[in-house]
Image 1 (tube, one colour):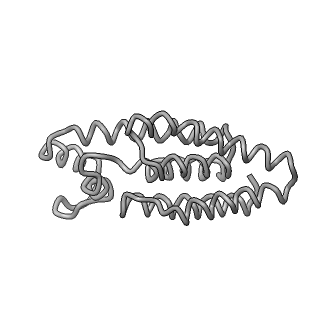
Image 2: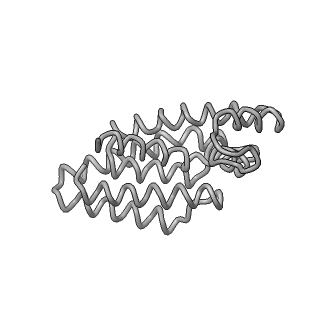
Length: 166
């Protein structure tokens, strides 16, 4: 991935992840403009790159279609998968998707715990004063009974990008 596309991917992941976490909704304007920009960036490098970008987008949309039909994922999550596939390609998206599924599984187990057990489990995982909630407990408090998949996908993809950079 070239530098411009990497910076654009990070910007998209941060904005989509924050929107999803705070509002449980990813604006269509964000997803559509990111998709168009991704395809434009790819087309600047040639037809073969545009085709790879379209394949990544189709793979991402296909990956999210079944969970969407089953009601396990929202439409914005599916569109975000498509954009991420367009930006990064099939191989990267596959890794980010499975990383998000693994992280989502851990958070899902925490959400299944009763509130008092959840607080204790999270407190053991966080450092800091017990009266001040950490990032993990703040995230779980926002989740209530469901998880913002795009936020988790964004964290997984950003972790992959950072591990490639170093």
